Length: 200
Ligand code: ATP
Image (tube, rainbow, N blue to C red; front, side):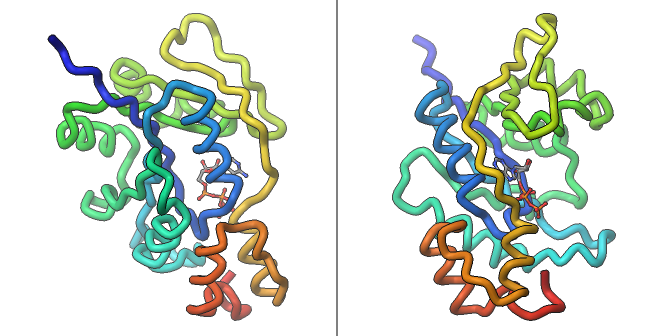
């Protein structure tokens, strides 16, 4: 008898830092949709892209790990750290499918990214091999044409927070403790992250 495949949502981002908007979305997808797990795929620094104020890869990963500890459906993934950079989603998906044949990888993207999906590298290959869940983003249409049977819009509640907002607030000396997981807040405080004006 064939074993049930593990439905694994892939949520990619820089997570600089991870905030409650990211966590609430992933939580919703596990509890209200049919995903077994969500993997937070931390995007590493791109050596060709300077000046984007991106903290060290392992500090961002540490914050993701701290934020998700104890919730069985989440995993922090450094998978892209070992791939050539920049890693295109199609390449990452190929490698993931090879490494974890027992899993189905389902892409989680915002309506803003879905609007640009046709311009991604090899969109047909992605659509052929993977399902996609599209979550709402303010100002973007969430309608998916019926011909895309493997793409589904998910009506998640939205928290209008961004990492940019948090970095900016910290640089201004504001207390953002309720915008991030308490353990993430602790790491930010301990390491004085984002707090100098040259860091946001
Ligand atoms: P930045 O402000 O640095 O661009 P961000 O908060 O948008 O960061 P990313 O790490 O780039 O965070 O986010 C990863 C993914 O999470 C992105 O595809 C983005 O669309 C999504 N995302 C960001 N903020 C939210 C939110 N508040 N709710 C749901 N999804 C979000």
